[in-house]
Image (cartoon, rainbow, N blue to C red; front, top):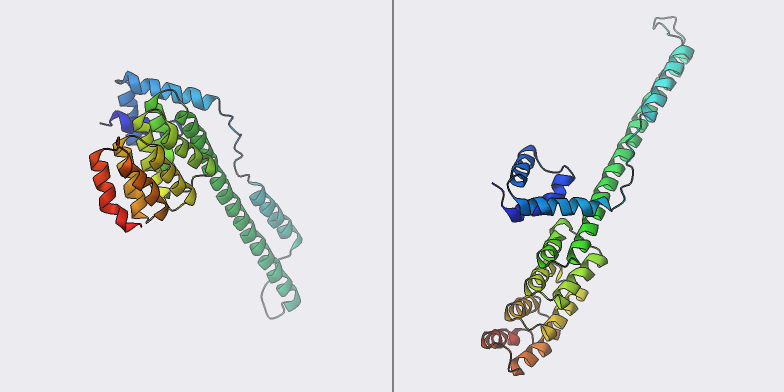
Length: 259
């Protein structure tokens, strides 16, 4: 039986028919018994309804039809020559050349059609990611903290998120009023710690963050990448009375690693 958090993370895949038959059945069964998840599904459908959908053009059969037309015309224009001792070799070579040309045209047409299909698959994938990005950014601006957390967790759908997504995640980590949202955003950003923008965001968070659990998370990440610019805000935390003792102990144990 699927749990609510897994169900809610599968809502977009259900709407886009990306679930397996078994997963889809479990999803529907869960919806029939859980009013909370049913509400989540309805809200997601309402959100997607305001996103314009482009009409997707399916590959045409024009290449194949053109080839068949050319083949038919060539058959009508070409005479069949019996291969005996009196055959005209010039005619034979002309026929062979015509057949070779037809095969080349057919293969080229198949290649073009394959390329066109591959391109359309890429476009469909990009369109799906664009929808997910719109949903993700909208959720991160939601009044509900649980919705904002759900939006942050959509980062798993993006292997190479664009600046808009990264900016939204940094905004949640630095300024969200809810501690759990900030912590979730910090954990989501740790996969992109190699980015200078993300490193600088963590350093800024270390200077402003008051929650001990988030402070520890950020300290561990910055020490892991040997970020020397983190030494100064760590030293400031050591001098602040409101800094929790266990946070100070953590800083003392790792500070020498980056100085």
